[in-house]
Length: 447
Ligand code: EPZ
Image (cartoon, rainbow, N blue to C red; front, side, top):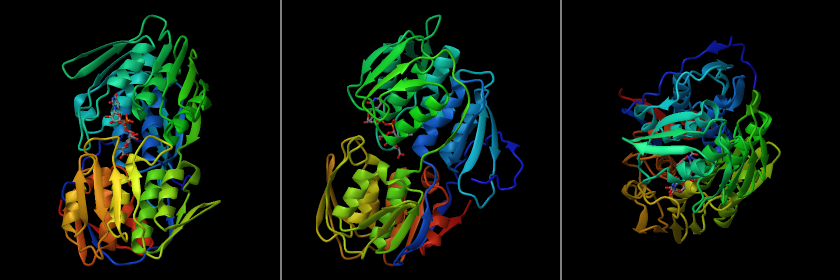
């Protein structure tokens, strides 16, 4: 990442304000061909950012994606007293270099109006508890895809010796004098966020913390790698048993955000559904085995190489039977995108969503474009159709929005996707990336 000749600037992040009137228009039918750069991973960035709270020294993140959720998190960190400096942010650059410094934590509260807009804000709970010994964080509430409680976050922290009480929509947490004494917690359900909060809190504990049945997602490995670079002592990285020997303090570090495996998988589906050949530059096949295996089973050609992964398709797709599950299994964050791709498969596919209880909100919108999908509880049967027809559709959540974009790329005629602020949360400069490989796509703003 070059510095781009831009002087470093101290940025006070403006809170991301969605443009509700923005739409994306797509005129479908073009095959996608060319090189498509993959950005830093949203779900890694959102757990790396709060690590700045764990030290009074500078923490620099490279390859930080330019996303609404990252902006919102930067705004929250500023509220907590973290200074932020952005470098190399030339308009044409993908990603940014961000240096954060929590010389002094000036607030230990994450207010409702921030947390309700971005539930990942809950990830300041563990770091605040570890650094400041206390935290008052709003409960995030549910979201479009499900209830999404945070009970497992709280139980893990309690097992490590924190005192927590939940009143009036807030969690108030504190640690005994001397810090978290440590302990052991076995997750009854795999939880990415709860694992992340617990690991960050444990990194400064006054003892050893053990997590069993911990999440193993690559984003958790990225978090552990940054913490180790900051001086943390963690055993079992990449496994479902993490042993964290708390340190008295952590130091600053410079770290590069991992490539986004879900963005890469999403654009792989774009190549598949349009019958093109796209080179996903920067994608890491080691993070994507289940996604790539599913693509191959669908008849898509997958060729990893030193700079990324080439995805090629003749547009003829085979039906699949897929069930989402925690890593290393097929990720829930790819379910909507595969569903869009499979609407054009030669036969019936069966998708089962085991993680979230309401992650089929893209189905009625895909049906408006001619898709044949029947949902029964957690299972959706997708019968391939000869063609999709462009239509005005409404985005409801991040990955559902991408499924509508994918369908629009393959549909006859024009598709207008409304409420694209959902997309801005997780896909950096989507229109530019797709236009560069041949899509007829533009963003229209009435705002
Ligand atoms: C993370 O959400 C991701 N978000 C999600 O990505 C992803 O879908 C999810 O992990 C699963 O992989 C970020 O990393 C910012 P969980 P998280 O805790 O941590 C239940 C996207 O599209 N649960 O692993 O909130 C929960 O209801 C987003 O990029 C509890 O019951 O997910 C769900 O059914 C969407 N109690 C299951 O566990 C808890 O305390 C998995 O949730 C926590 C979770």
